[in-house]
Image (cartoon, rainbow, N blue to C red; front, side, top):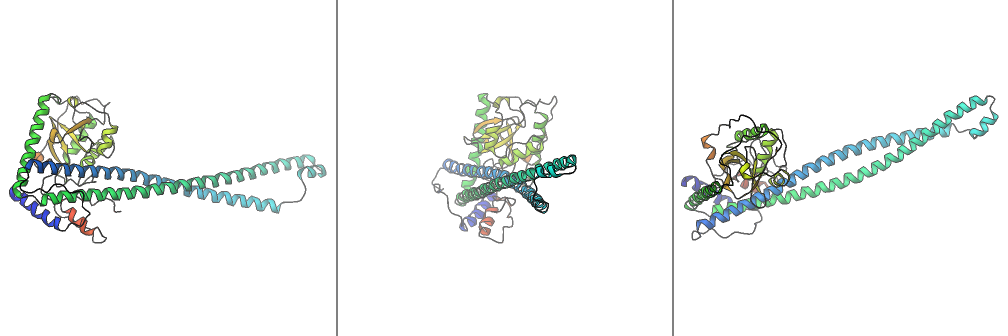
Length: 404
């Protein structure tokens, strides 16, 4: 294990030396004189801040996607309104020319008095009346089309302004994630292999102790009820993702962050849920821990910044942190806020066979104290090329994230 952590420390040291991002408020220097417990607390806090920034980025990305849809819809409506307005103007122009060409200078009443055939004149007047009403309708439609075009143009400009503002917010959120990850890199680079080994052991001890206390408290049921049909599908999808890397802002199929995994699992189960952990906690029905069934979502930290999918028997499937992979963890691996159920009205299965979970699924850290992932080719153009390369070395950048 020490050799693996030595490789991490060496890589992180090179990365930190090349750091070019603006620093975030520095944490206490992890010198050898500091207790390992303090180092772990600082590192866990840094990861927590990183994940909170990631969820902010994800939420902004979701709003930006919705705003893009609004802008596209308004653009389509505006294009149709302009075509309709063009048609109305053409029709109004045709009627104006026709009226000018057919002008005789005699009113319909005078033509009726002078006509040899009054009935014919009356019929002609009826036709003239219908034409007049058609002209009035054309003029009215022209006015309506002009008003609609003006209103839609105003809405489109407003929607575009909102989209640009969201794009700027997304960029700031992205930069915040990168800065937080840079801080984690600096912390890891300053640790010795022995410190990293001690941190991993202490984390495992803390998780085991938290799991034991949760079990003894009775807050978690000793038996696991069967899931619903949709919950079973969500669980099996999540299990199929075991071993895939964590990447912030990612929602599969190659990599995931925590809420990307849970949202995709339930989307594949046929029950779409919100993208972020905070939205999932805020909008989905809550369920007591002693009633958890496979497929339910366990939410962590007071700010609801981390989430995992309940597997059963006190275990969850989660995408832990940068540097780690999708894995099976004890439910108490992080401080629990509560749990939610995406399908509260669905009936449980009469017979349930849990999916087979590989023995290696529990390996690896729950807090992301893992080996850096292989380098991913970075952009070759733009000011962010060096920074992206540096962050990709720890699996921090999602290559599919939109460029800003």
